[in-house]
Image 1: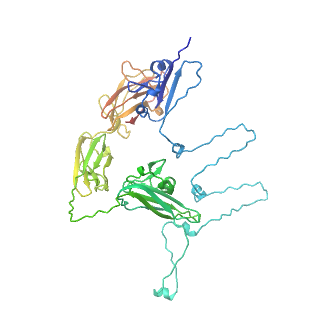
Image 2: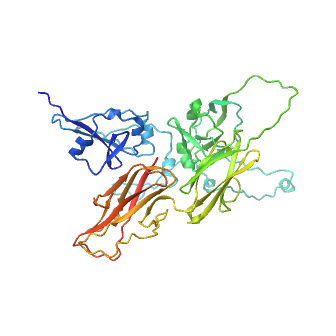
Amino acid sequence: MDWVYDNKYLVQNSSTYKYYASGQWQVISGSPTEQDYLNYGMDDISIIPESAWSQLQGEVELCYYTDDPTKTEASFNIETYPFTLAEEWEDKEIKIIEYTDDPNQTESTITIETEPFTLYDELGDSVDVLYYTDDPSKTSAELNITANYSPLDELEGDFDVVTWTNDEEVIAGTRDMMLTYDALPFEQLIVQPTDMALYGDVKKVIATKVTGNSPEGILRMAASFDSGLTWKTYRFNKWLDLDIQNTTLFKRKGMNLDTLNAIPEKDLIGITRIAYYFDSSKHYENSYLLDEVKMVVDAPRHTVELRDMSLQLLNTTATINLTFSGNKLTGVLEDADQGKVKYRVFLNGKTYYPADGNFTRLAASPFNIELNIDERNVHFGVENTLKVEFQDYWGAVDSWETQFIGSYSGLMFMDESGDFLSDTFGGILKQLDYGVIIAGQTTLTKRVRIKNLLGYAVDHVYLEMDKKFETDGVEVQLSRQADPFLPIEYLTYGLIQPEDSIDFYIRIATDIHAKPNPNGNFEMKVTADRV
């Protein structure tokens, strides 16, 4: 007789166990039992679509159940997007653990290839050298260091060299005094001040350096796609944001010459400027000489002959598509002429953004607008007016305006009467007061509502009590329903659309031995994932 064994699967994510059914993830309360696996476990996880897997954020664990007594292990084949170890290990500490059963081996050697650096890069300008000897006649030690150094290295910023002379020709102004000195430049950040004039699509960027016999310094580069407003570096075959004002970060993560030259055509679309970081170490006689950076552009090569023509300039006013929800202004500002655009925002007739009342800098169209309105500038419970003025490159001005009732933003807690219990920043507005609680008793149940005032939908809502407020003999219990009240440590909910709300219930159970506390408090935390 052949035995038929059960093989069931569950997925653990965000501290909850889930199974996929009816086109969506279903949640199992608490830790699954054997009966949960039999009732809800999936027979085949390969049928779960990619769109469902993408909804899971953070760590995902596959849980496997079988009643086959001969089964000792299980294996899964997982298909992911290609990635490299460099992407996974970036900015992380790496430890290599070696095992050997060779009793004669006393040490190991690991060879790692890195970008060039000096001890000065790692240790800085101040180092303590500790010296040990068991020579009883040794009473002192000396350390000799050979380095390129000048007292001028200690001077920060610009300085003047002042001298005195009795040379009559210099005094008379017929001959100039000359000062000659040898030095290496400080690290330099050079930012291209204007956009590159490109008359076609960029095919390739080619940078060349001046070769020499001396050791090379450091050259790093970054690119901008919005006329210098933000900067990016190309790492792991994609563009990543980079703060070029942080020279330490620029030096570590900026592109070197080979990386810039290897960027494929599809990733060069829209490039407008390049920034450069040069560093010729003051401790070594090295430098970096950049010969040229040129763009290979697919542009028309044949000339056009024009005769007896007239030119008429037509301008289309820019348009804007905005929404305001959850104290967030989002939308797109664009110009049909593909020209540049700018905007400014007024709140209740007063300047809000930019703070000086001027328009923003001109930016390429279409331009995405994402602006949070600080509720501290909003009039609560009454009508507020939000106005956006926008302008195209030729000066044509238009505006968009909306009215809204001032309120908080976020996942907001409310009591049964609809009053907010806390504000956007976590400040307490109203206590959920249970009065005097006698040890050994359980309080009445209070209903609490959580409302989505974020302005966008959220999923995987997770509610729990803050553990740091726990007290021996006192337990704050949560339940999805009031009758019957089914206590649970945490509550989870699925998709919540903007302005929607969910209700849950809270009570306090005490032990007869609970110690008195005249000012006992507890706090609740809520987390969710943006859809």
